[in-house]
Image (cartoon, rainbow, N blue to C red):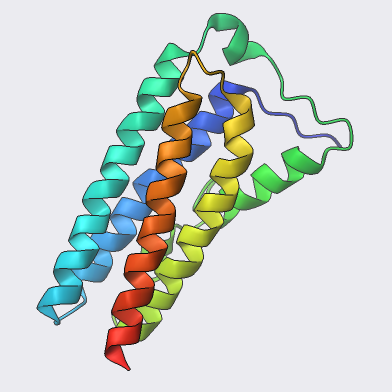
Length: 163
């Protein structure tokens, strides 16, 4: 069975990923005693909120044709990949990352979970970039990708500082 997405649905997934990311960082911050790490997690949550607004704006700017046009994927690889990525980020009834936190995780565990989630987001957004025209904000998607890469760097520095 083939799964197809239009650009509107793909951006809806991106919005959900950002909502879940912000929620994860806020939940993790509540469970973290270290003030520097707590503030870094809250800063990352605020950046994810900004990404959410970016994707909402792009989605509003999609033309009716772009909203309905299905992503061309003759081998169904991109559709399967996008569905897998969305599922891993709390999409379609799956648990979001923040719901998997018990409050017993170490700071290292939280940072490693966050790094992995950010890497997955970057890969998803690289695929997403092909679904948006220059007019609708392809450069904005590229900016989000760069910021997500920056999040990975921040998280890696925090993790290295703990050692």
